[in-house]
Image (tube, rainbow, N blue to C red; front, side, top):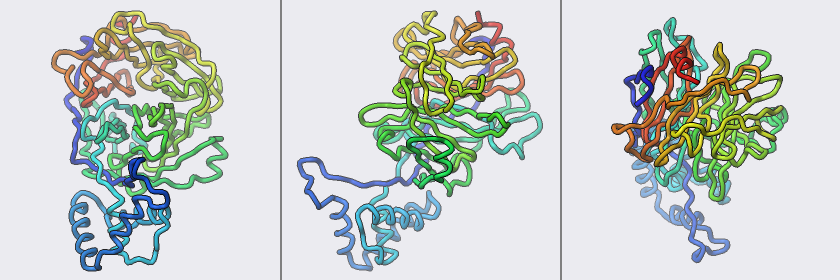
Length: 436
């Protein structure tokens, strides 16, 4: 299962089909049946407008009773969805409230965002440590959930680690998810960031992070938001924010994108430019190096690369710093999450792909001042799939999108078989001693 000094902890997170979010739904016509000027949405609305008032009211009550058991403020949600549809289809906004809710219901769908899998976690300290017991740390965990249609979304959990290294508590998640609202960003923010394109997502109704769900909302993400790598980033003036890099999968291609948040409710998402944009595995360092942002990449899907930039949104001229060396990584290597700064340098959790496409987790130590220098690395996997854990959505995979260090101990959430998520701890001294 793992190197001898790695201890597996008790919690395991499984996909839960009961956790749902209400998302937009707008059916269209297949090409041979598409009629110019008569979209399918208009036909659906016409049918609802032809219904008598008593039938409308009865159907609305059915919707409210069914969804109300799992979601808050359903009437407001349906009205908001009507407003969106009304703007797109140019509908009459003087309709009765019940008829508006019914139309909103026809253009909504309840989606189980982690029905098939819950995996590839990353972890950062929680923005609020106020109620944390002494010697412990509260954290936010991001996870990739897969639902209907193999569609990937981002979901979150919270928990507490410590004061003993074996003490790990995962908070019970909310039974519901809150859909993000697409908003117009503050123009001043756009100017400051210098982004060519910016999306603002607001999960303002979420009461805590586990209710926040980030599902695809634009074309570049239409097939999924995959493998968020979160880092708590420290600015030069000491301010801290949370930045995440992820792979946005569209119908035609995949690209790297970046999100930023302060509270896990309001998010700003940006495309990444430069030659690394079409790759996977980008992960930011938690601070600037020599006045520039720094990041690791799996630029060519085989080796580990490093780059610097004046902005986290444009990366050019990355350099290769590590290549496959050991049998368990002969196919490819790459970083798993953002580098972690420790006394000895930058600890990077890596992955290696070997025989029968098995994914193992490894680690490497980079020089603090010059991260292009590999000081030492593990010759054997830190964690690898075994006979009890290799079966699942994608067999023979152990993978993570980041770890957390407290004192001299690493907490590593990791996924098994692209299916479920579990946890392990490893003493830094023993981990470093095992490197060559």
